[in-house]
Amino acid sequence: MKPASGAKHSDESTATEAACRNLLRRVLRFTCSSVPHPFWHLCTSVPMKTPSIHRRTALQLTATSAMAAWLAQPLILLAQEAEKTAAEGGQPLPYMDRIGLQLYTLRDAMKADPEGTLKAVAEAGYRQVELMNIDDEAVRLAAIARDNGLIVHSAFMDFNVIAEPEKDGVGSVETTLELAERIGLRHVVFGYIAKHQRDTADKCRAIADRANKAADQTRNAGMRMCYHNHSFEFATFNGGAAEEVNTEANSNEDEKKANKLTAFDIFVERFDPHKMEFELDVFWAKIGGRDPIEMMRRLAGRISQVHLKDLKKDTPVITDEGQVPNDAFKELGNGIIDIPAVMNLAREIGVDQCHVEQDQSPAPLDSVRESYSFLKGAPA
Image (cartoon, rainbow, N blue to C red; front, top):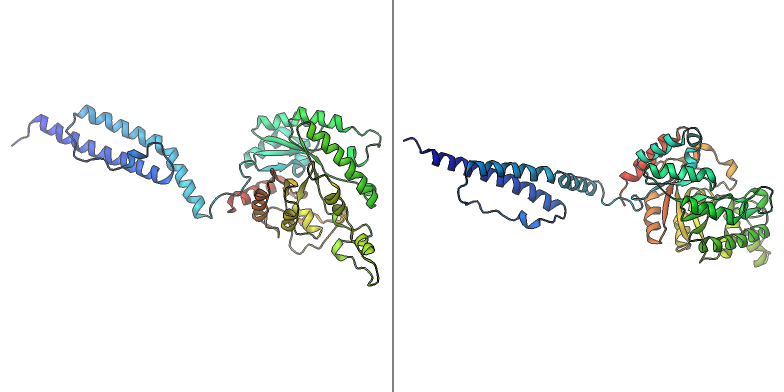
């Protein structure tokens, strides 16, 4: 017997409705099991015994279900990405949400094409850049960086302002801070001392005292000042790395201490810990004969920024930065420094920013990309 028309429509509607409900339930169940969802209660079982509905209603339900599935796609992708991250080793490294790049790495490219270079940095995944200078050009570069979505919080000042303020043509701390405010900085970096400026302990003590005064002015301007190390700070004033210096058996303790004294020892002792901070460069610390992790623990609370660099295996201790071979500088993950350990400890001791840097590379932009890829793939 041929069924009545109404009965046929009723059967079709019930089947369509059931299929749609099943599809919607599967989408929501997957989404809710993967990520927090504001409609978690929809993931509970939906009764399958329902009154018959008309064909038009069933079609509307089909469209609604399809729309729900489409809207859920971003959440599903987010869940899949989270599952992938977990499977590959867990949470991302700290600072990846604001990982920076010191633009000295790309200094030649920045001279040739600053706009294109900063765009490439952003496309590589970096979230901020640290400028090489604090001057009028830096004001312009900061604006270009921000146009590309890059944060600009830190920049290097002219080191002569502190190391040799009486030198002809050197600006003042006040002028430096005015420019830093125009750029919108939070960190002002004192990043070098020339050989003739650092060759005695007394000269280094005087520099530390001037740095404290400048740091006080920087604090009053709403910013922070830090000192960026190289490896020369770990050499003794009578030559060699501190741990390599031998003293005579009959030397008194004061003589032994004097023989082993380094510029870094003076800075640690003399910098005001409440005002003058450090930007620890882990490459230069390591090649200078120090353990970056131990230094970070020792200086906990006094390090505001960290430079992330890697060092070639079997590189000897070198405290003359001019003698470091170009190939000693490696992309992150290609050397001997435990970069994830550095970043995790940095978070633990309250470091504000981490910046990637590679002083030398035959292909700087490729190195920048490779270092970022390492950081993105490394588990915390």
